[in-house]
Image (cartoon, rainbow, N blue to C red; front, top):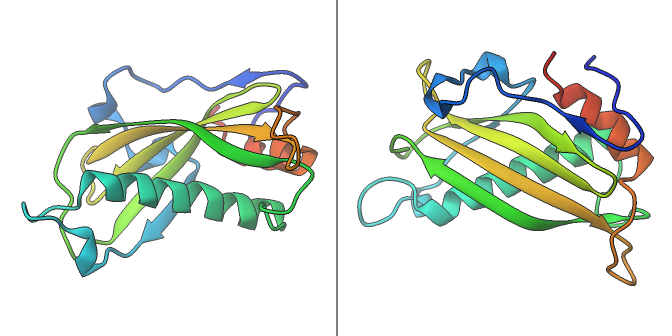
Length: 159
């Protein structure tokens, strides 16, 4: 299990600043996703918007599994407030794609995830950042990360 997440914040730094140097082993959780024919665009590779759909599915799917809860109905819900993606190589149909998940930072109400897209044993085809801010389901005001989520985040830390 990963390092203890303090009450307020935790940051995990990648081993290198060059995203091309990342490997699957740098990500504590790997989620495999099979691509669909509809995921490719006119240029023959997966469309940039598909990268965002895949990371959303991987992060939220992992959260549901790791917390054994329905993440849509908890005391707080995670809203996506920021995503970025750096495209390094093309990803082609039929896949599959392996998405590596790693904790980048956990604050009081927000969590930043690093997501690596892997298609072979080389470096990632893409590197992304995905940020949740936890809010009260009724008021939509920021609130603390739920304890079950904070506990699960220890599985995404890199020592």
